[in-house]
Length: 141
Length: 247
Image (cartoon, rainbow over all chains, first blue to last red; front, side):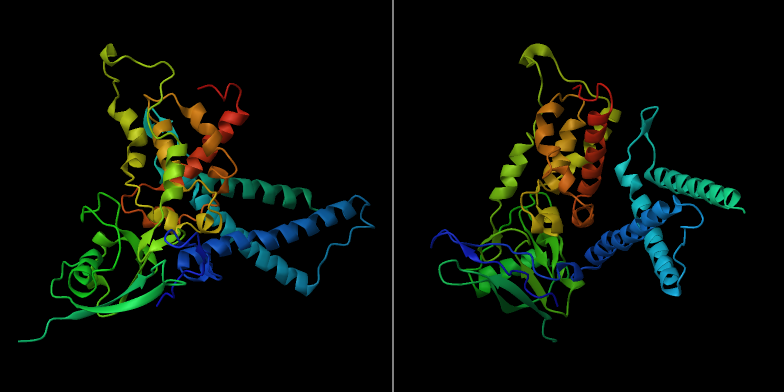
């Protein structure tokens, strides 16, 4: 059962008074759609933290091999795996919405949204392959 | 003969002259007809149990958009919410979320009406065409560009479903932006530049964080979330591309 949502307050004078709306705490737990929206938004936070750490590592790399000591503790590896899962979830949800955002016409006919979504996933796979190749090929020692 | 089925309706009651806050009141009513909808139940309560219950309704057929309420926490047109989908559980009927309550199930829609007006939902021409100037001719393809966004019945379910509007009522909101897009895509219209200050405002399309629930609850399949995201892209292109601000 959904509890009464109104946590607002009375406003105005008698006879014209209204009960104002106030968003209840925990509103995002009331519907699955809201919950997964918050999860989607939240995943960007650890991702940002991980990228901040990457910037620190890049700054250290400027000092050459002697100053470069990438974090390799078990805790950081676990954190990185979790961040990877978050990044995948964020990317999949974001790219799945591309069909609603992009709108193209070819020969006066709109391109189906499924095709747009597929093209986004294709571009993502291609970009990942290029980055993977560059890292592996040029990372050989 | 078996006794007719009964169902419990828990409806919000709020008298601004007496009550400090809304409360739920239960009504048990007969449910003998499988085609009964929540609006029928409210009409039964008003006609046979408690004539003081206040709510809006008009057409009973999903056209007027008047009877939108929260049914078990979900924004719905009560004329399209069948009791059989809830029975034997009790049904909670509340005023639409995110709006001030005037009385019982009646919300104050003033803010929505102001927002609707602000996007100038009519065809704007730079040079007025005289009545004798002939018809505006449109192809089917040109109509298809905006047809979906013209199906909105202003029922405000999308506003009740939008947590962004619930947290910040300065947000222009889903239906108003969808309607703005409807006119901006209309080949007869030349008013994009006049709507832009409202829709490209930080409290316009950019306030939306794409929850998407507005499109889920829309009873007419309008997809306001799509309208908002496409408008974001369009306004960005107008800003970035050379000659992008041409009308």
